[in-house]
Image (cartoon, rainbow, N blue to C red; front, top):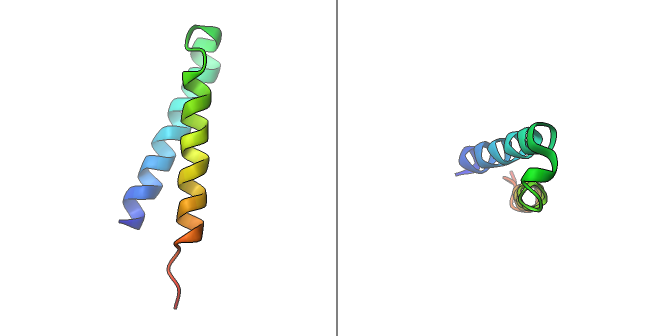
Length: 52
């Protein structure tokens, strides 16, 4: 499950970068929604990380 979360985070960040640099204003707030989802995913992963 943890690897899946990291995969989703990476896909969201790549999508955000493509949207931000590739399409600019055409995509609008979708870029920022992807960024927020990626940050939430990272925070979730850090909060529920594996503990020994």
